[in-house]
Picture (tube, rainbow, N blue to C red):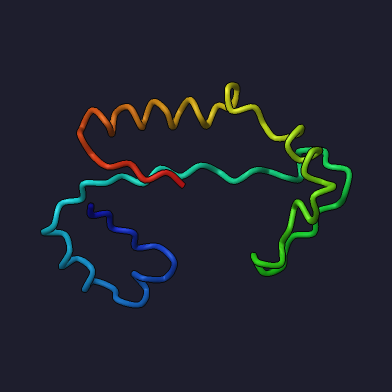
Length: 101
């Protein structure tokens, strides 16, 4: 499987040297879903963002898990899922690998 992921500063680090990989075809597509908007979920506690990712905690204990699960968006009605499912079907029809994140 070959997917070119030039994010997170890689292009800034290596620049046009990455174009040398253009001769190798990609056989994978990366589909990304937008993260949950926890601010709009109406959780009973204030979520403090703006810290390091490993310090940012939405569910800070088992006692908060049930509320979080109840207020998560329904994947059956989430427009992102429908859009991604259609895109995934196109990728499968091209006999390509699909990376979902």
